[in-house]
Amino acid sequence: MTHATTQEATRTALRVHNSRLIDGTGSSPVEDAVVTVDAEGTITYAGAAATAPPADDDDAPVRVIDAGGRTVLPGFFDCHVHLAYAQGSPPGRRAELDPVLVTLDTATRLRQTLDAGITTARDLGGLSAGYRKAVETGRIVGPRVQTAVRILSHTGGHADLRLPDGTDLTAGMSEIADTPDAARIAVRRVLREGADLVKVCATGGMGSPYDDPDDEGLLEEEIRAVVDEARRHGGRPVAAHAQGNAGILNAIRGGVTSIEHGYGLDERALDMAGERGVFVVPTLSTVYAGINKRTMPDYHYQKKTRWSGITKENIARAIEYGARIALGTDAAVGPHGVNLMELSYLVDLGMDPMAAIVAGTHTSAELLGVADRLGTLAAGRTADLVICEGDPLTDIGVLGDPANIVCVVQDGIVRKDLPLLAAPTVRRP
Image 1 (cartoon, rainbow, N blue to C red):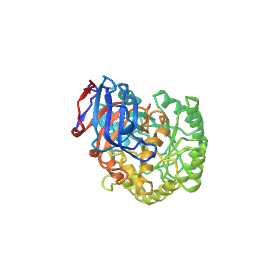
Image 2: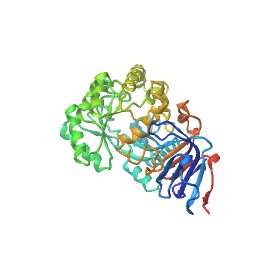
Image 3: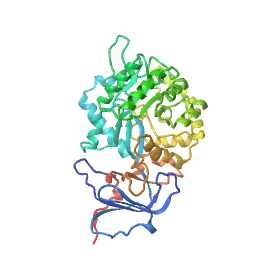
């Protein structure tokens, strides 16, 4: 495998041919397709080879990639990750680690996530805005980042990582707010630290020792204050950790942009979410791949096993209802670097493979507010694309194995390229 490092990355025009195109809109695949990208990283054509612009229309240098009949798709999104944490590592443990090692390990996880086909990620707790800047400025290579920086929780709630004696283990992850006014101040703090969005805890959770998923978190009036404060500062989105249904309803009524997890969604909540255009990010990886009795505290294991069946039943209903589902994994609870296994879990619960791909591309781009330039392959869009082995419409699981992601292009730059696709830059005569 070859990687474009930060220093080496150069952008030239690209031409991908001999490919099967899935463009992220839900349209039928285009066989024998061509995708062309200009030297600024913008797609200039994506469609059938028969109507593609000629390969020798100018004398600019062009890198030609023969996809060998493989499938070309848009770069994928993971709308719920925790890149600052290793899988299974309790957030409170980070305070014990050398910050230099945390930084280097986080950069490695960013690289792994990109190599898995995720060209854009939304981090929902623990990731400094400095990592966003590091990717933007080429200091490190990874998905472009949106980050919530910290998580808003009430005292004793899901993101309160203090010990009973008051020792604070949050290590930069939490903001505690117990009144509407305190919630407003907490929003101002995270935005001061560079947050792109705000995350609130509308319920308890599985990984927190002091509460349960059915427990309510921030009150509806507190969530409404957060949403209003985020609106006052550029209309920032608000994501709600919400597992039990009572907290889900509070979050939707409070005006949040997305329900994260949504394990207890009932028909009333689904109807309300649909009416208000609220996204659902199911993070099924947490129940399919995030349960390990050997490594989890017993309270965590017991809650996970108790909620696993409930989650699958309710998310299957949400899929059947046509909920506005975006892709998220809660990576760190489950493994990093295999993010697109989430697509298989959606399909296992009844989603059509093409619909799952749309959830991970176009719908996720809508949630992150970037659908005007990312999430689909069409002329005028930013050139984020992946090339994969196999047919994901026949076996969606091929996307979940990073070894099958043979090429990743981000902003028109080839970031991952297996040797079988390597080709020199050529100059047209």
